[in-house]
Length: 116
Image 1 (cartoon, rainbow, N blue to C red):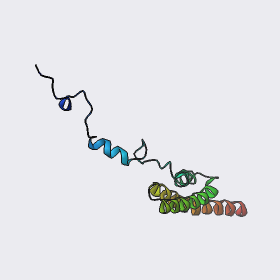
Image 2 (image 1 turned 90 degrees about the horizontal axis):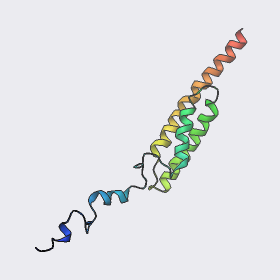
Image 3 (image 1 turned 180 degrees about the vertical axis):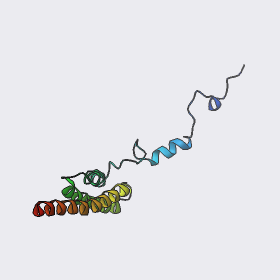
Image 4 (image 1 turned 60 degrees about the vertical axis):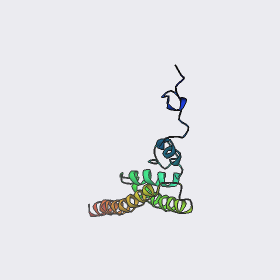
């Protein structure tokens, strides 16, 4: 009985990596690029944009989310390998939507106090 060809054995590693292993090299993290940990400004803008919709703390967080979102987009433009442009845009949009909302609520509170 002759020895089987080691290249055809299922217990040995292949000489060339499979396509999945080559694809793994292009991804930079275990999250598949969903969380832009290499662009902390965009990620922080995203969370501040969400929290800017909360009452009483929304106005300053909205301003910060817009500012950090713009900085996150600039970082992405300078280094296209880092991700996070969607997180930066979400932070900017939520900050822009939250600020007038809080200004209207504040103006309504002032009008209610002065009218009473």
